[in-house]
Length: 509
Image (cartoon, one colour):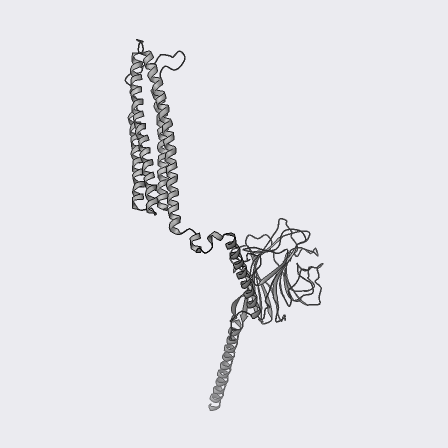
């Protein structure tokens, strides 16, 4: 009995030890997996990047980059090749990439009219800046890697557009007839032409592993990447240049690069490299020399200007420019002059209307005097008298309106004289403008009152005037009043429009 109990205890002890060992090994594996899944530290490197909206400088160059061939930099993108036949272009970083692990995000657009395009676009990391050549606009026999976005199907296998990763040690010649399929380290089929949104490629080289992710450009989501290519145990040069090139052939596409963003990757737990504290001496001397040349050119232009304008020599530069107060005074004077000219124009138009009204009254009065002796025209004569009285009252009102405009012109002249003596527009100037506006409103009310009072003619008697032998013997009151009302409404509308313009001008000043 004692022996069986001892055996059972021994078996339980063994099971417990094995369980502890198993759990310990699982914990070690989980910890190791967590450490390997930890992401590296990313640091943006501006000297190896470019993006809009101020991508190029005034002279057409790209900061820290050099372009060649048919590349056309602009403010928001770099057109590597235009959609013309047999074009080649490229852009390359000026500085050497001296970090082991990196990641680049390239945003580009390939667009063309046809269903098929050519030839394609390439992203490079090589030991030397590639000159123009036959491999997507860059030189053959490169030393490094190239990620190719091939648009044209040279081998006729209907496997394009495609993305390829091709490495070279400087001795291989690119296999164009087979679209590089015999030399590709990895490939995937992705259609990157004529997409509604720009296509993005994220290329990561970390711990000797190259990964290519593609955003297909169907959605505006910039982080919507799809896996494309992964190449393990890949050894590339430790130092090199980033570059982008493109080429066209018998078919042509626009190859536009919107941005190229480079990041330095640092392994977790390692000390981060210090940022570049100061500019390299060669670059500093270059910028210093450019500054001195610019300063000398500026001094020379100042001397030439003083020789051409000896009358202003010795005067302070501030007196040559208009101050804020002078500009405001000039704007006030210009506004007053415009108002003065508009009121003068209205005064002339009103004088023309008065002359026309006087002519009508004279014609009607002559006709009444001719018809006074006729017995049949008593009723028509009475209507003519009423019409003449109405015309005379209209003339009196128009004379008052003309006098009002004359007073307005006097007030504006007084305002301008006050501004010339005092300088800046003050409270009195604002009061003068308010008086002018109020006076115009009074004139408007008088015209509306006149139209309302004379708008409904008397309907006591309707007498038909005799037919004139050669010219009209009488003028219809209805037609005349309609004519006067239309002219008055047009005049009032013009006055209201000018009042709104004056109010807006006052708000501005």
